[in-house]
Length: 459
Ligand code: SF4
Ligand code: SF4
Image (tube, rainbow, N blue to C red):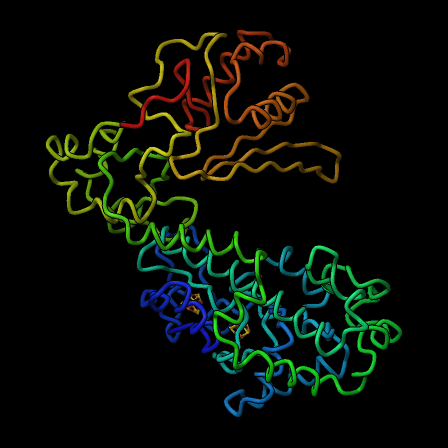
């Protein structure tokens, strides 16, 4: 199992090594048809993870059409979508707006619903395997290095996705310069048909004929030839060429890959701290899951589970002196992101104030020593009921009363630190109610108490 040839060569140049193989993702006998966690919906062997319609950049469409290895089914599907103007723009052979909506709404049927199956799926296999886009090429349901392996895959996906955007635009600038304004945003982002960003294109599945004529210009009626010409331009590019074309637009994504790569190679740190990890009961014992690997529990012995609380900011050597059985599990616990080095933003447990919460205490969102992202979402039910949800890592807090919603929004704004007493003016019940609410969030691992002054906990 590997990346497609072009992206494999580019990533090998970026990483200085091949992208790690993922033997735990046994695609021929799909691992997700037998998920480890009983609560995880099993994939159907007839669709596996291909309940997804990719948006292929112009050069991958051309490469797939030019490759005799592309199956007859996939080739016919590519040509049919082009002929039907179904997302066929000079930048991409895209998902349609309806398919884009399915990707969100259809999450419930992901891995199961045959109506969501990719057009290029051919009898249990990908019909254009050698030319998959960044999303398909970097999707692994299970990683040998677990959560930190997933970090590398996600970073690779973002890098290759940005490369695809920039090269698709690079082709349009060269082959269709008069249509750049219609196809590219001023900040060098493609105008996506699937997202309704092509003016006048929202007429359902097919591009409106007038829009189709306008964006294809001199290549109208020769769309397949255009895609093939794009492939001929991109196929010989080395990573140095791609880097020069992408310029500063690739800097952020490259830094993310470098960070993910460094985590794979990093030695076990001198201090490790325990973040939030959910425990799941399995037939073979208790497993630990974290946000990047919610369906891939790491099963550890009870003696290791019991010792996790010792990772409170003290040296790993001290923990091992007290609980030597943890030693052989350290690497796996770091890989699963159950344990992480103190990152300067979170306070190790032993350094947090204890006792009853005081109005003068400082609280902050606990980011799990791995900078777990904080996200909020407003839901309005058909009956008009409003719920505000705040999530960080595997923890979620919900509120549906106006004052608790206001308080959660205050927590979000003050994620890096806020005075506990300020919540008293927000909740109807004043400080007593605020203290109960905030203490609950601390106990649930959503908030952490911070000592006064700047962080001093990193040895
Ligand atoms: S990557 Fe997809 S096909 Fe392969 S094992 Fe995982 S879910 Fe199954
Ligand atoms: S392009 Fe291939 S790998 Fe991607 S969803 Fe379609 S069939 Fe699956």
